[in-house]
Image 1 (tube, each protein chain N blue to C red):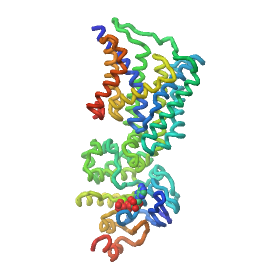
Image 2 (cartoon, chains in turn yellow, green):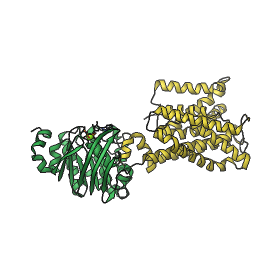
Image 3 (tube, rainbow over the protein chains, first blue to last red):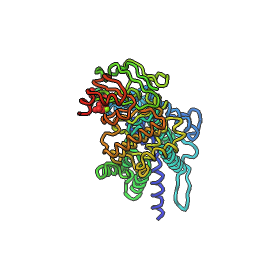
Image 4 (cartoon, rainbow over the protein chains, first blue to last red):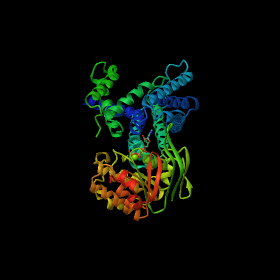
Length: 288
Length: 235
Ligand SMILES: Nc1ncnc2c1ncn2[C@@H]1O[C@H](COP(=O)(O)OP(=O)(O)OP(=O)(O)O)[C@@H](O)[C@H]1O
Ligand SMILES: [Mg+2]
């Protein structure tokens, strides 16, 4: 019984990582329709900045998180203005090429910085902190990631459905021409959405720097997984992201515990589940 | 209220509007009639700021809005019932209406009141207030497009073929709504394929042919004109 609860707890906490790394991309891809292949690299830059702030200036990630998110949000707005803006009206493959290019540039910059260091890890005092409740271990930092992810999903959901800027984002995606007709400044909306999207990626990077490690090459895997979760959830469906992350997290955790050598397959299983879902229900399982 | 002076509009290298001048007096209904491809929609989009004219001027209440972006034009009280409705399909009727008022300061403050007004014009929309707009019938969507434009409490409303695809009964409802809005003080620039109806209710009519204005007169006079009768009324 205890093992089962532990599996559940680990799975739920793992889902926090999926949520937090996917949320930003869900805003760009699912809500306003920008295909950003550099999502994971913005995340990686966030993790790097967090590590730099900690090792060079001694600033804790939980404090630098605000500065880093803001910096990456501005980086996103800059990226939008000088490049992305120009390709939004052309074929989608141009967005893919452009953002792929950006991902390589960010990777190279990170390589220049990290040089020969293989992986970068930081050890804030709470890194390995965990509670033990009735024999169930609960990691503090993973709980923190989960709670922040949950708050962000709910906040974004609220903003999209209840504020002018959120409704404008949905309007722009549903009917660009209609958006112009009612007086929406579509350019401004894309700029904000993309800025917030990569800002959230940066924030995710900081959180991951607490529980995992960073190299210049961690980005692509996150981009791929985030795209997969968005497909599973159904485009533009934030609630679906929550459920999808939970399902994937719990399956992954169960596999690691109950199947000998199961952790080794977790990546494979992740994409296997996604593949099955795409075959059976291509519009996403949580699409209303 | 609106004064268009000698505008020329191009799609790439192809000229769509030639030296167009039009005047819309405050409080009036002005109709533009013309065959398919004459350039009516192009004219509406140019006023709205979606297309920029190559030359000429558009003056609205004394301010030059030539080449301004649509969000600027809309925020100044010009709303648009576009060709093809262009509603937001995944939003509810309520949200579509709300968004029609969202970017015009005065309209946003009075949105509750305005919504009562548009529901009095189109009770059907009130019945479907929570339905996703994309799942409504074509006629209902057209009513929504008109209602959304009214939600902006426009000073000037650009109306592009509101009766397209509507049954005769619904056409009447929509035209009645336009007349009522006009009585409430909304100036209307109307483009219609239903030439008879639109010239009947218009103070002034313009005839647009191949991107050029070929005639201008008051609505009733144009209706009696032999060329109009032959070309547009099939008499
Ligand atoms: N986006 C575009 N690119 C190139 N040419 C265009 C474009 N839109 C319209 N045109 C051309 O401009 C001319 C005027 O088109 P417009 O849509 O303004 O006509 P219209 O009077 O509204 O016709 P209808 O009654 O069929 O709606 C047409 O010859 C059309 O082919
Ligand atoms: Mg037209």
